[in-house]
Length: 303
Image (cartoon, rainbow, N blue to C red; front, side, top):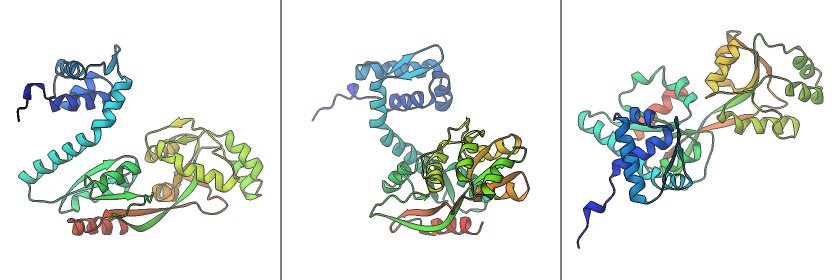
């Protein structure tokens, strides 16, 4: 059988396409790829010529993906991620006898539980942040070895072990005027509390949206009452903003307990009844890295 290798696509074009798609411009993509901007532009032009259609609308500052680019990205992203993980794993394996554990989680869990202790581990860690359904998908595919998740997505090949519950609290910055809110809560004037909450300055992030809807439904039997005035990168950012500014937010207790204890934030309300989310260690059955996974579980549960 004869193959025309000259007609085969260059995989570097796909890597370049992924970088431009995710970074949004040629300059940032070239920095991520450690290459020149003209080289990035050439790869994109070659890929467009190969596939036969335009992938980006070029402006002075941005590379805006076309509908065709969105479809192409969805087709290739899983395969490219597998190649990147494989490359990283085998590059590490050749130069280091330490084992490598790939973990999916939210950035807040990494900051609270891993950053203070990561240097004590006798194996390497590859931490990945993302949406929980995607992380569970990559666990199932063998890309990840462990996922720390509050979402239990049923899969016969995955084992979920619960290890702690987070309690969602309504908190405020210390300088925030909350006397009316506190009065309505103390006297159980829930309609008045609802109206007063609507007037507040709210901080939020993308990973707050899921449990905030539960909080409002559980306490007011309604959909979410507010739209965030300030949407920041993560919950740690919310807490830092509240320490220095007026405003309120919904945050898990394990992330804000130090700030509450140090009087950097004030607790307004725990709700009619506690809103609790269970966190799980999600693993594949019969993992070859079971000892390393158990070390991670012990590290987190002891903190």
